[in-house]
View 1 (spheres, rainbow, N blue to C red):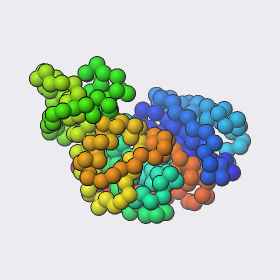
View 2: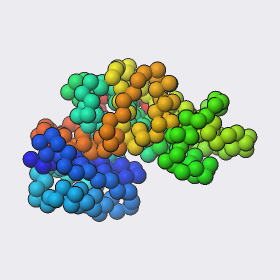
View 3: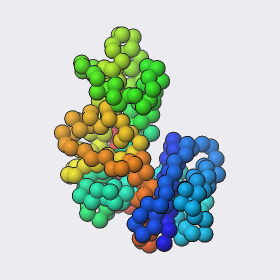
View 4: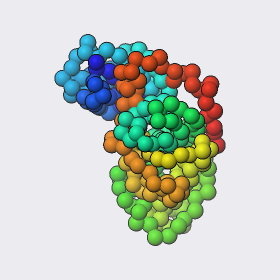
Length: 272
């Protein structure tokens, strides 16, 4: 049976097609105002890659901030459930999942079946998310894809104390005016982000093994800072930006009643 998982993120839409526990195709496109139309486009691109038609897909489950705007989705689930299922597909021993996307980060503790035991999110502040890295890259006139490796070249520690994205950006400008090396400023941004995620992870009584997913997982500078902050080894699954969409496709294939919208009332979502 072919199933579809779609992650309607703040910056991108991801689709995964799954059959017999095997990924057939996955696609990623930028999001925009007409989310319904873009969801259809993302699905069509994935179907084209897999050489399938709409009729071949038996069930679709959506997740992400725009999950309720997918016209062809049978059910919706929240991101913590999707993340846990998706990561455990790659890494069965993981018990703590950290997801850092464009505009929010979350930490999730789960059991061996991917059932959520606790989670925390910083969705009200982008200081711990990928958007802050993008802002820094534009401000410093550095390519976004170079931010991670430049961070690793830093030779001095520069403190950035702001705990809010707005104030963090102001502090970034201040660091630039001090004529500090770009690599040290970039490192300070990554350390500030890691500090926010560290706080989330510690509120859920983090357990090993630990995995990092979401688009920011590709950033080796942030990953290094997070490892140092948490003082644990962190594994990044293959194609970390597709983890939530994969988890949604797995839920679709299982035939389970989706409990994503109900679990919010059962799990304490801690805010910092």
